[in-house]
Each structure stands twice: as structure tokens, then as C-alpha cells.
Length: 284
Image (tube, rainbow, N blue to C red):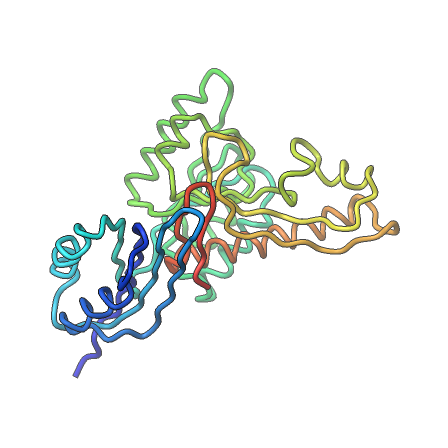
């Protein structure tokens, strides 16, 4: 006998009494066996958030979606249902620094990330051989001020043609237009090379070194039209001291960036991140 397929249900709605009971009762009614569940009530916004992983062989994925729509409407729920076994179609974007790209590709091929990496887009040629070694199509799309709009149109065409649910800016060092950010809302993750909001702009580790910092860090966040102001998914820091050179800080920073981005991508691909206005709720 084949085991029942596993699904992940995420939802948010105005908080009210009995929501956990209602959701679990709905799943029980339709043959769902809850394997993992987490919820959060945000007293500040009055919103309720929930993530449920459950198995069910009584209905197909499509049938469950239809029944969920009818169930969710009276609660004004925003919800999504995903097959747990389906890896998330992903497009990676990179410029000339490849540490995050290399780390994500290795974790993916090692089975540590539930991704289906469909393409790599870059404004430089540097990593076409790395892409080829992982058998991932590489799209070289140079960007200038005059061609930026047309290039973004082509980038979006690639993303849509691959059915990408996630776009990762793995040190892609071009500012995205407001239109592009809107098109990618909620499915594009960026890694910022500092512990936001300090040391924005160019050469952050030089700024940090010049200020004699004792902590350096990295921030993974969703992309929005407000540069580096999107909802934060993950952050981390590393302790440094006066003996560290700029090169030391850069190397340590790259390690931290890679780890922070990998965690953010993993949580997103497992549908553990729910948007809560300009913040996130993360069910680890």
C-alpha cells in the first residue's frame, strides 16, 4: 500500500476563537492526518498565522484546494496548499561574487535544499562554467543604464517560463526597478552584506573596518521597491576584533552571508515563512 501524500497548508486571517479547532476539524473531516502544526497570534495586528503539515489520500491536491476555498472564505483566510514532495522551482541571479551561488548549488545537489534550480541569470560571464558543472542553464544578460528595462523584461520572461516560485539574488549587484520588484513580490529573496540597517552602500567591510566594529553580519530579506527595506527573514553576526584585516572581515562576512541566505532559502522552500505586513512569521 502506497503511503498517503503529504501537504503543507499555510494560512493567515483575522484572529478569532476556535481557529485551531476549525482547521484541525476540517482536516479530520477530509481524512487528513496532522504530522506537524504551529500557530501564532499577533496581538499587535490581530492576525492569526498557521502552518500545518498533514498527509491525506482521500482527495487529490486539486480537490483539497476546492474544499479549502469553501472552508476558508467565511474566515477571510489567505491560504496556500503545497505538495511537500514537490521541490520549489527556483531561479538564481548573481553578479561577480560567487560564494552564495556556489553554496546554494552545493547544498541543492547534496539534498539539503528542497529546490529545483531551473536557471542562473547573471550580468557577467564569470560563473557559466560553474553552472555547467551542475547542468543548470546559464543566461548571460549584461546590464547598462540604457538596456536595464529590456534586460529586466527578458529576466522576467525566463523566470516565468521556468515557472519559478522563488528567485534568489545570490549577490546580484543590480538595483531592481519598482516594476520588477512588484512582479517578484513575495517570491524574491536578497542577501544583504551587512547587519541591516548599518553600513549600507558600497564596500561595507571597508566601512566596518574603518569604524572598528566588533560584530559583522548579514541579512536575508524579501525584495521590495524600498531598497534593502523588505521583510527580514534571517540575520546573523560574527564577532571580530582589532586584529582583523579587511580581507579577514570580507572572508568572515562571505561565510555569514552564505549561511544566512541558505537558511532563508530553506525556510521559504519549506513554506515556513509567512508575510506579516513589513515583518515575517517563521515557523522553524
